[in-house]
Image 1 (cartoon, rainbow, N blue to C red):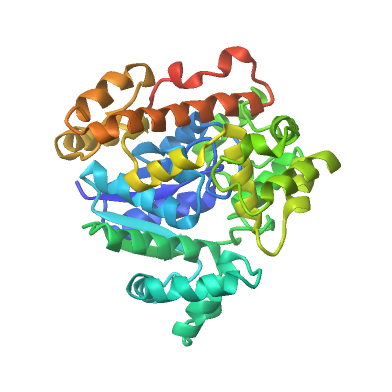
Image 2: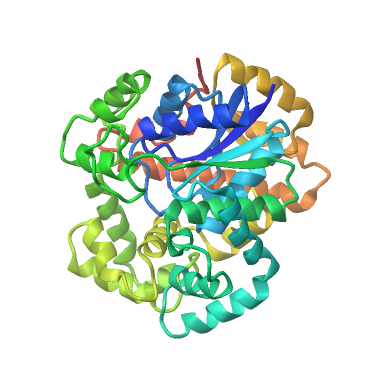
Length: 414
């Protein structure tokens, strides 16, 4: 059964995602789809709008066959780490034949040229980028300028558009891991990634979240099979409360800066800047704005604050990134997906876990002859479980009994 892989966040699943799913199946000739999806914290350093089980149910209702969770260490990280973790997860399943991603360019050859340059001239590009960083330029801007010098005929937006950037990182990851998965891309349809315009039927997730914040109906921009699940989740308070997020962050940032200096990415004075900002502002958006500088991008700041919120230590994160994903966390499946799972159980390179309450024995058995990973894999899972507990505090209609949802929420099936 030809199977296409999708790297997703579905925050929430909208008409553009449905277009991507259908086109991915069409152009690859796949008969089934596997999504690796971020959990409760996303690549740009934001908590998800609704919890991962709601988003899984929406994906399955729209036609995705399998949904796996990308561990927090990779899901809430820079584009290279996000892409590498997701590609490694798809490869480890052992049954994914192709990867199809959306991009502003819609041109695989152009994206591949940039990816090749980044791999083949890595040391030179990193050296020149580091030189530009010393001038106070942000990392994305510095690397884009360096790449433009190596690839003068490449359109500037190839190196600046967010989905292009992720696509290039997927291609790099496929190459660096020696993956047999074949890449495809489709041109992004409708509004841009950051575009809040909702005048067309294909709006961005950013635009949809803006409407929800304004308490407006968004059914028009969601596939019909997804609407009921999503609206019921909002009514039940299973969505992010920005006010709760700000208060939770303040409780950490108003401590002495020394308390979180061993947290991942807390360096170069950002600890003092975060602490001062927390004293001066009254909401999350203003907090980010107050900290932002030429040196630190908005996404870097947001991710750093999520690491502070979850108390992610630099040493443990570095160990996770070096090891790669150490398990595949199953969130949902269709009947077709369960057929894929049956094949994957014979070919998989990582353990598949469905119930965290039983995961310890599964993980210890799988890694019994690989002592270097035995403790690390349990720490990686504990971080994912901690992310769920913290996310439970941020949901508007939740109470204490919902904080350990990983142990009570079953794998979704359709």
